[in-house]
Amino acid sequence: MSVFINTFRLIGIALFVFLYISCMNKKDHVQPEIGEVPVSYKEKFTFLNGDPYLFIFVDKETQLASDYEPQDLVKLKSGHLLRKAAAASLEEMSAAAAAEGLNLIVSSAYRSYNYQVEVYARHVKNMGQAAADRVSARPGHSQHQLGLVIDFGSITNEFANTREGIWMYNNASRFGWSISYPQGYEELTGYSWESWHYRYVGKELAEFIDTYFDGIQHNAFKFLHEVQGNSAIVTDKDFIHALQSGIIKK
Ligand SMILES: [Zn+2]
Image (cartoon, rainbow, N blue to C red; front, side, top):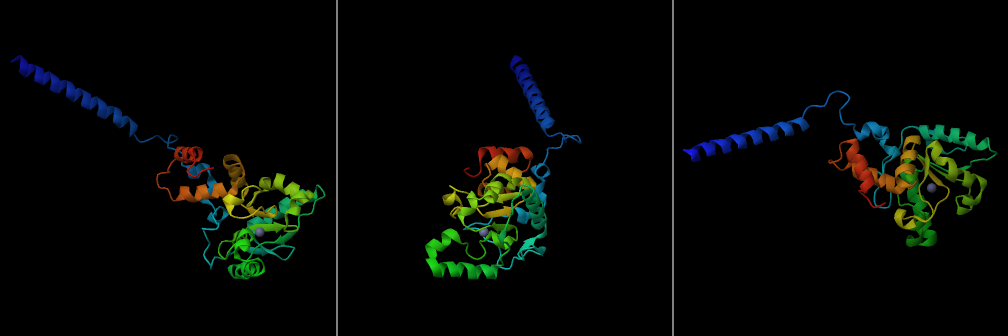
């Protein structure tokens, strides 16, 4: 008889524990009140909802479609073509530089896929393929096809020592521009140092690159490229965690 009662007691305790645990678990699944909804990283980093070409990853391995052509190119005073937002930003940046007595000279901007075919072929002809690959992008792999890039001044690293080159290095990101091939990162980017080549990314992204990637555009855009293909990253917390743990090696 007492065995019978003890069995009942045990069942009772087990049932209580089961109900208690399910109740605790339920707490975690209660629909959050408005205001408690987890913040999506896409709400915090609003550039992710904007023009994807501002941060599209283009490098030696990853290429643009051969028929990609920006639709809002405008003509600069220099005659070069650039996308509208980049051109407006250039105007603002040039005015700020001019106020300090500096003259930012645009030497190259938008280059179509077909034009890059010619540029690359010319480099290969002049210096051979291995050397050409260090200084020139293969067609489809050039950031210039985005219509968001400017080569300034002499298009040599003498630019780095000019007053304009120094000013750009220190101020470009305030206006939404980012150096693509910095000194000392040849192995990472695949290109030798190009002190004259800046990509327009917008102010928000420029700040993001500076804050989380020490100003190294290649790493920031590679990170964003990988994050976008990762379905496990949903909330702001996931995104920050990925940033901190480094989905890619910094
Ligand atoms: Zn360039």
